[in-house]
Length: 225
Image 1 (cartoon, rainbow, N blue to C red):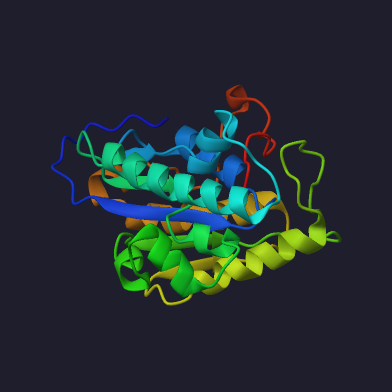
Image 2: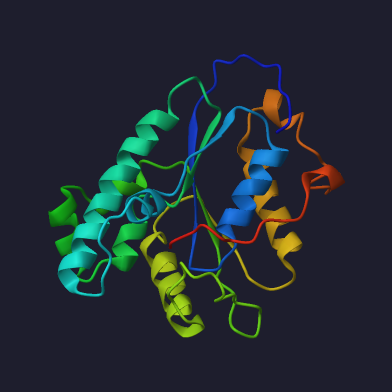
């Protein structure tokens, strides 16, 4: 992580990093933690906390609804912790609206079950950054044992996520074309533009995302969604 001497106070901005399975979110988040300053607070994925903690997971609608309600409320509480200690950016590994893309019923059913609305959830976030899922030909990776979706289903989920966030006024979409480092560079550039000047001044501007001491790029080994 880059050292930054500014003390703030910062005008906190909440940013969602989202996208379909295999889009590269985990790798981008690790690059963020290596490349950006301590005033960028990265939150863990709510689905990883829920399902990784042993919450029952099965294809039946009862399980799917229960899982998405749990993820929704964990996400809300994670964001409460993210706002603590004066961050410039709170970077969320998915947001509350992602659950709508996985919900087995319609949108009105989702709002009723979660007690909120589309407008309220969109207003929670300042920026949405969507990484598109690559196709099988573009290198979609199904080797992760935690990723249950084949390439075709992953593409459908990616399209649903794209749709649920489409009304956000500041959504950026990073397509899957090109190699991963190009995709990651675009994502990091968007994040850098959201930083206050005191923090962005420490961000590498020569396109070098990591030093050789950082080791190999991480595979997206932990993501559950």
